[in-house]
Image (cartoon, rainbow, N blue to C red; front, side):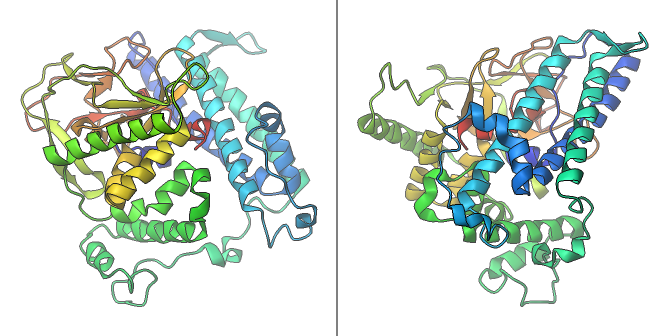
Length: 438
């Protein structure tokens, strides 16, 4: 499952619309689209607010009070004079975590409101569907934040992008061999020249440049502080996935699983599990399952995927969590595991495990954990009932379930050879990496 693209795409609430009429479903879809847009603008406003010392205090004061362990750095009193030229790197990283936490919690609250459903009334006594009520709250909060931003440091909103030349990357030019990255990576030019979609090619090239610059700013000695996005940049994952990455054979899968077992033994030796130190990782179950799937090269931005190995009936169990599914209760342990993979293998394998991992809760109001499957189920690509996506044909849980219990069922009859797709937002908390200390 390639969760990086999902996180880039949108934040969206999970919902169960089985009892709604077609008209209500259409209305629900329109409201969800609008709420997603407002939520995105809200996050942008928070980010703008954080770009000024005064604004930072406004946006994160509550988070600092509740999470003192996150803001445990000592800052130089003289740094305020040189704020624009010498921004404290650690402070910036922790601010990003705080903002991510805010966005995550807002998302979870809205999701819970949608799941509860029901009606509310406005001042005129008109009944409002819960999503519309939540939308009004979001709009009001956005207006307040923008007003604070404008009063505190006017002029940042709507600045001319031409004044930010240092952030502008040149688009890909097949005739220009002096473009950044190409001299040191001739294979990248071959990959880019083979892409027919110019818009996708240009965005891919610029994204690889951005991640390369991000990597250059990272200090390997501080690897234990790397966030999810730092790890993506450090292991050059965007560059790795620009080319064709092979499907794992049985030997490769067995090697990765054995590496996990070796890592567990070393982790226990370093710090044993007990009441004060509960399990930092474990296998979901001792069961095995032979799913009716087979891996293949889906092509394009999708990369690898899985397709039906035979006809699958609606409601049939397609795959589920097994002994190959690993749960990390500690974000830093997952981070250490990535470096262990990189030490034994390479960036390609490390990036595979990184993007196949996701954050989820395993029970109602339970703590978030990091989950990854060490089998072909990890190649499940995303589908959505949104423009630009193919519709999903698999979901986590049976129809009517409100929690994903790690079993995935077909939502329609699927023909042999059809690609299997699932909406990640049905189970993954796409913006919760900061809650795992990542």
